[in-house]
Length: 418
Figure (cartoon, helix red, strand yellow):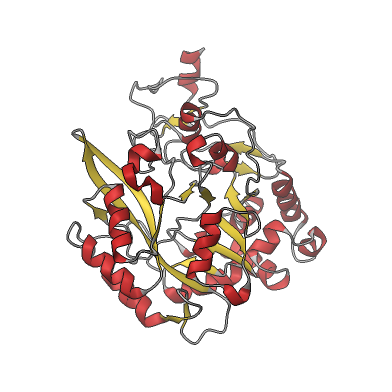
């Protein structure tokens, strides 16, 4: 059985997330996209947790489905927690995702976390515990809990991000690093970048959406092959821990340049810095500190050269979400009616979003679309694209038809560098 999983999402109760996120909406979006295993997100938030309990019913052991639904969409209980702690007088904040096998375990963990956080304040709560203490708490609540660092390279909240102050998972999680079997790569890195880090070679490299609105579900996802009769929370977690190509088939990733922290930069001055060309830490326009991006940070910590591929590496496939593809071609916003109508037509006539992006025959897509959309999808599959890299919180742009060239740079800073 092919299991397509997105293990990091949010509810409408998390900061900066859409008010339209509901359990039913998540379910219906997964059907469109071809996702059949999705995390519930925000299991620490009492109101959302109550909604989950009323909307879901047990399916396979440790997994859940919408009450009354006949679809194959399954939910796994899990949410993101921000660890806030001090090390040698310096404040640290790192994010991690916690998966649980049942609601009793979630309740037990929330009882522990509530003593260190106001869980009602945010679906992604700030908990006054270290990353190691959060892992300990999760395992105390249930020994089958599964914790992995979220978007590990993000400058501000990633365990290995430029502002974390940590240069290894061992530093960030201390003795609990032994219980980390996977990491989330985040939108601004891809598998080859992470393969360059020795410490990560025994970890499964996960790709999740970290979505804040329903259309963003599955913008990154993981593909597994698990026997249908054996599917359960435990067998799925084992598939991640084993990190074996027999069960873990591939990840679908952003082109990492599209992520909003790929290059160094300064948003206010519209300064984007390719760290392979310029090794500077201050904005050349205003003199303020640059946000050091993921590419720079990976280069700093890497102990293998670019192009290194470990034995039995899990394949990855670079994609652009289908609504983004259509919006790019039509030159319209991805939430407009024109984009939505074309999206619905493709999904209804060709197949799920996963199929359209990855393996549907081009001829079949052409029968339900336009020549430009077909060309854009073909270019994406073959990586024949031009990319303007993201920086300092600004998403990059994938030029699927190679309409544009160059970086969005301030005219003044480049003159100064020259």
